[in-house]
Length: 363
Ligand code: ADP
Image (cartoon, rainbow, N blue to C red; front, side, top):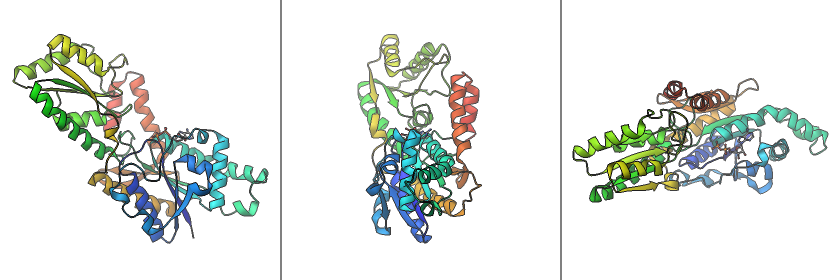
């Protein structure tokens, strides 16, 4: 029986458990054996008990659990070849030649690199006498399939990453709570939301809560932003609004790539407009809690598709990443998705904000 491994890696995201459950059960349904790798690449490098066979009932209840039950980690040793050599040995010892990774662009890049190196790693293990030629014979190629688990919705070529709608929902709920107290005291709140270099969470939270102003990295405000923001917020207040909400993405910058921080915004609202202003950093509540219905659906359908992709892979097909495009589950070349994602960051770095926005829209 073919053995398929699944792991979660990088930052956790609601819905990762749904993906693990779907991969395990679809693998079993397809007459394969399913394995989970605990603690991301750490489990692969350590091997042994960190690579565990899973039965149908072992993933019962996974859909409604937040975070990732099989653990995730940032693993330094997998960044280096000796770590990947140990990982290859552990996989051969367990008889696993297909790996489905649910993680961000870093995790997926590492996986594809591992696949590229695989024949060399296996040959080296034989050369060093750590494995025999017979042992490695059935494992000439490694299959890699990516699933994008990230609250940031920061991967190109997919409309939604597993976790982003759960996180967005939590942000909206939190802003609603803040709204109530802001209204009561006529206060202003500057709310920092996650997203690393991606403004999707901040922008969509702004749209969904009717925020007064939003700062995102892909489309920085005009050079005159201090004046512009104060003008708009004053207008809103003059129209009778009792509260002010400004959302700042954690990667927010101005047109000269200088960071825009919540405290800069707070000082402006306090000093220029005389508003009683507080800062709320939502922090890790944005990652926690159970997955919303959309993420359960997305992770289940994509997990099942990932297993199909493993079974249909040939040594020539580039590693796929499972995407959602216009409401359809589709496969795209993993490396191209990562490359396009990096192009957004490059466009921002080159101050080509129109290109950054159009690359995001192209999703
Ligand atoms: P994310 O997957 O959320 O982008 P990271 O970038 O931190 O998170 O990557 C998670 C893990 O994936 C890293 O700790 C490392 O073990 C592995 N990884 C990331 N990039 C590479 C790479 N270029 N080569 C090998 N492994 C990598």
